[in-house]
Amino acid sequence: MKLIRGFITVIGIIAILVIIVLVTGYYLYLLTPPIQAEMYDPGQSREAFESFDQKSESFETEIEDAVDAGEEREVSLVITEKEINSKLMEVLAEGELPLKEILVNFGEGSFMIYAKVDVPGADAKVGAKGQIQAMDGGLKVAIEDFNLGKLPSPQAAINGAEELANIMLRLTLADWPLEITNVEISNRELTIVGLTKTAD
Image (cartoon, rainbow, N blue to C red; front, top):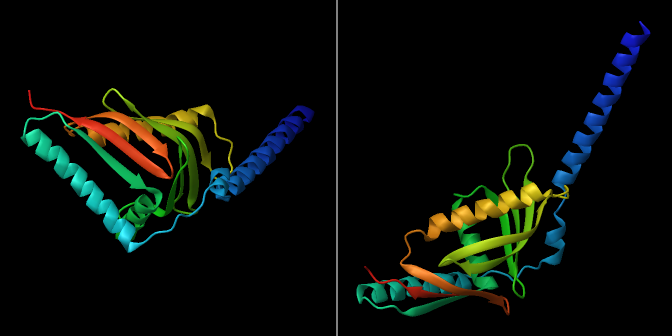
């Protein structure tokens, strides 16, 4: 009888500890990520949104013209914080992404992202800090820090976020006739430089 009672007591203690861990984890999950406190809102405007679209269209046209002419030509695209945040607000308004908020900051050599993801039950608040560089003719993201609320971020979660970001980049750039040669983040701007590819 003592053995059974002792066993039940142990199970009860374990159950209480699991509940405490789950409640604590859920509370930390709901909190704002520490990365968000380092960020600021550069603002959005219709002019910045239109500027983003004009720059992107001009960049794509320049690439297409060089490819059609069979030329290897250096092209570049410079996007400001305000332009990318204005474009993201427009994309959010379309309602096609499971996001309620998103904010991007460009520091010196690195970027920061904060997003509120629409999750049933309670929105997930995610923050990430990292670098982006040119590698093997494409782009590669290196995540330095990743927050889901204020939950501790294991290295496996950081590696998973980094791998997912790089898969999405590879898929997005797969058909581009462009070899990216340099990426720079400075003065609150992202600069991408590439060399157009000619048909074999």
